[in-house]
Length: 174
Image (cartoon, rainbow, N blue to C red):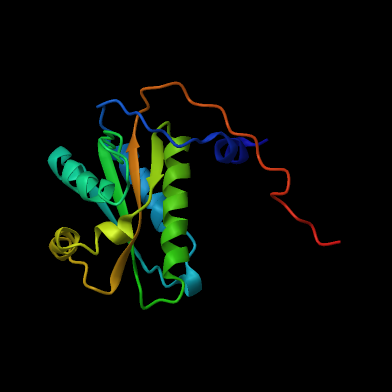
């Protein structure tokens, strides 16, 4: 394997983070990689919001966690950085575009020694009154929809091994 394929096959979702913040220079590089994700017709429909205010992260986590039936779950795992990817619903490929941004972010992060976890329920979170107020604060109108959340930080656990890949993952036409 080369360096890129090794990173792609080694990255894992991390659910236990240290309090250590991600240095700005590294975070900026990760975010830049997100902006270079492919997008349909290069429309670049996504917007990336970065939250590092611990209180706000906890408030968003509480709303996000309300959509899951797990008591006491912190869906952002105490990570010091929360990234929310939104995309313009008027662009036909908006979900794909936002998902590609998230993929670039999590893989770039791992290549730079930063761990992550892609957390769902951004759509539901930002359809609430609380979420809509935040979107307005961030300059995002109703055309934008939450695609996904990424929590970033440094793991406070051993990197878990990969689960075995399912045997029928790839199908070749014969």
